[in-house]
Image 1 (tube, rainbow, N blue to C red):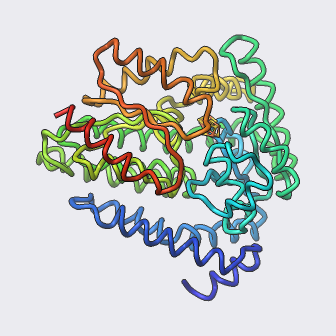
Image 2: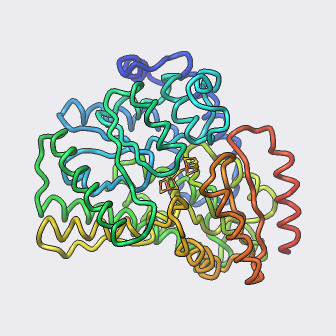
Length: 425
Ligand code: BJ8
């Protein structure tokens, strides 16, 4: 890492020693899990580069943007509309974290039985190791699960500016009205932060930019219907993870380039693994960088992941936003319509998610579903039981996994996953 980066990190307020330790672990994990894979598409070199520079070049870009007067907004959830942020000439970055850090410090503020994703977000803040969080001019928390909702009350004292967005829990007309009111309130707040009023033209352009990004990642997903799959689940997950960090236009271009390459691979019947490899649909909680544990276990147990029914996956990207409206209100309604379709387990009841899992199982020609919940995540753990039941009624083999970010259960998980994959053969 260049000296420039070190002084940049220092200026952002990072703890350099702790940050060095984090980067060392991240680098080693990436080497062992990603770079050791065989048969990767050449286009993944872009994502390898992004990951090697995830705390370097990308942060430098954000710092440069800030110096040019642009604001950075951090988010923990796909419900925070990037369209509104871009339309006010700001940048949205994902802040969810996928590794344990400063656990002892975290447990002084949060109960031990809090999900690893929330604890990790706090750990990255308390350990001063996340340059995205430290670059953010405003952090958006959303009232989704109880864990996040209550944790934001505590986070409020730790970050410069926390903005809390309320979200509906029921897909009713009242729920939709709440979402619309909250998106309008958010729009006003973002305009206030940036000093840039959102116009019909800027909102249309922003919708187009985000749609292009979603369409590209969706194109990548569609190519995984091929048998043999032209790309590993780990690599596809990485692209889905980078979706939340990268410059949108560059991301879109890079994903489309990989898709061009994958199309050629498919034409040659070139896969990452042989045609008969059992195909897995992964469903459940989102997986933030560097949470690659379960996909790595699955793909080193003789299976290939062909789809992610998750917010770091298809849940947030399967639909595009209509940008044909000609007033701010029309476009805001279209944004509300788009996000109201997101079938997060915080909604009750949540039948769309059940349908989507089955639909994805069929579309991606999967052989089985692995449902992944983080320990202590009530919404997804609760939903995993009826999901399993519904899938089994359709004779879809299902394995329910509950885990966290630690490596302690790797052996035990591997045994269970291997037995499941064996059954699929
Ligand atoms: S729209 S899935 S990104 S809330 S794992 S913190 S649910 S206890 S992440 Fe999510 Fe938005 Fe929903 Fe998607 Fe709570 Fe569960 Fe922890 Fe979770």
